[in-house]
Amino acid sequence: MTDHSMLLDVTSKMKLFSFPSLAAIYGSRDEHDGELVGSGTFINIRGETYLLTAGHIASEKNNYKRLVHTRSIASSPAWLTNHFHVLNQFLDICIVKIDSDNLKGTTIIPVDIARLAHQSNYLEGDILFTHGYPGAKNISVNLLDTDFSKTQPFCTFIAHSVYPWFDSQYHFALDYSQTGQLDDPHGLSGSAVWKTNIDNSTAHWSPLNAEIVGVVHHWDGTAHSLIATRIEIVRKFLLNSLRSEFAYYHWLERGSPLHDDLNDWFIACKEIPKL
Image 1: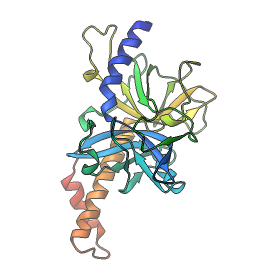
Image 2: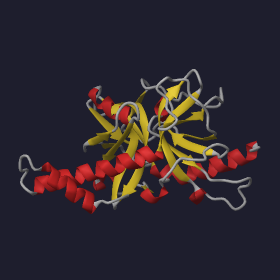
Image 3: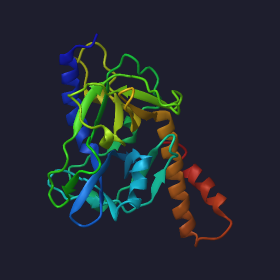
């Protein structure tokens, strides 16, 4: 049985480990005010930085003038200007490329793609960790003030969902039933879920043992659980998104010829055989 002191120790260490790659995502209708719409994780893929989040976060751009992401303490937020790659509502995953200029002078440290697990088996019994920005959507913050919403790191365990669309082949659920200790879950959409890979003691364990096994996107209020899409789906989506992006820019470089897009896709698959 995992004791409370172990959970506190793991939470404290994982909080420091994950914070440099964490982002809050705000919807903004003007230059000053924003509303929290979700969380995300900066990922380093092939030397470029992407923000991994929930798919429905991308649709929030229809409700605001723009979407912005936090960068680091004492840095103003930056616009999300590039194309959003979105997986369907059932799996609800999104990535968007981050311009390198947005990272200059910040303390952001993207998670390397190698920290994404290849499979999400054997989650039962392990300590799971997630870190995001909780809170109700309609709470306004001053985007010019660099003191943004507080984060919520917490350790938890595998749980269940009562949603009829929940499918354990594609999803897993996290226990979020610590009433009075955890904040409003809605801003946590887009948070990465880490499997800590810990045994019975933290004596020889470090956050370097942990790996990302999924991405949170829904809150099941009846079961008091967060629903995440499994990493197998996320990795396949990331690979296809990168190939699509590569193929598009290759097509532009060729002068945007009509009726010849498959050629660019085949080249992209050859250039990016795997993550």
